[in-house]
Image (cartoon, rainbow, N blue to C red; front, side, top):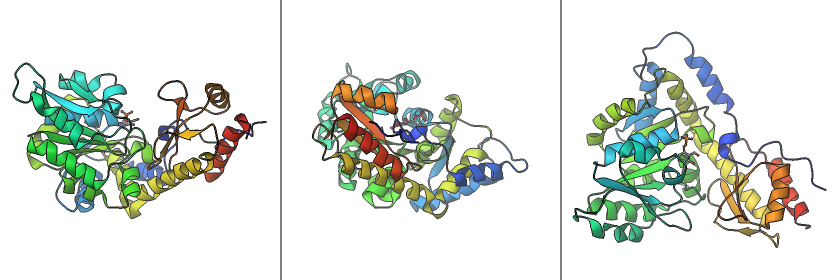
Length: 346
Ligand SMILES: Cc1ncc(COP(=O)(O)O)c(C=O)c1O
């Protein structure tokens, strides 16, 4: 018999609430009055904190959400005749309702990838059309770190990607909705796999890691900052009461809360992976490097488990994704693993 279902869900890290520090920061930011649209103390403090985090002057813009941050950043990187190279499974390609194509007015050049990562070689393969007027011109590359499949680019892989892109005159955007999970997985500071490898614009995620809402657009190339400022407003991504997003990010950066939360999420995914890896009818399909576990199991078992606790199926009808977050409890991971074993008769 199945045990009582887990108290949390493994459907997405987005299903968790916000961390107490973030909620407290929201209440703190509620005191008094502030000039709107970012001309406030919290946003100014956050800009200073981001400069310190990246150990250089960066331009920090705050957006409502991840799709918004992505479309603002990408618009700044390409011209109307250019397209964006990305993976087929990227969030910008499959989960943003065509917002990038609509706002950019350009083509996404989507490349198949079994682990949701692009390689420098795959980018090179797309460059043969450069200079041919009949073809969409690759103008930027967008990569996701950590990826939609919970995998993580190494610093070396990122350097190779940026080198091949920049040498051909392409810009590089990083969708960092889960950048904290990547930083923890790589065990290095965030600058070493973003600004220092030459990423041009980064969407810096907050929501999935314990904020209520809000993402940052970090512009590393100063020549792009002015464009981002106007594009942000034009794309409806300029929140008037910006201090509430800034205050949340400040709480996350304080004492490295953002890394501690992501570390916990990653550890919970590793624990789940470890607990289910020996089940004979379960195959882990992606390396568990961040906060997601992908696995195949018999179809009938998936339906029974989904009646018990919510989660999503993925490729085909026998692959599933289980996601962990900053608030996932180890006891809930044990319950999920127990449930999977029970359903499979182990
Ligand atoms: C890789 C990735 N990028 C961006 C987003 C941001 O999406 P939203 O617009 O829902 O904040 C998500 C959310 O699931 C995501 O997984």
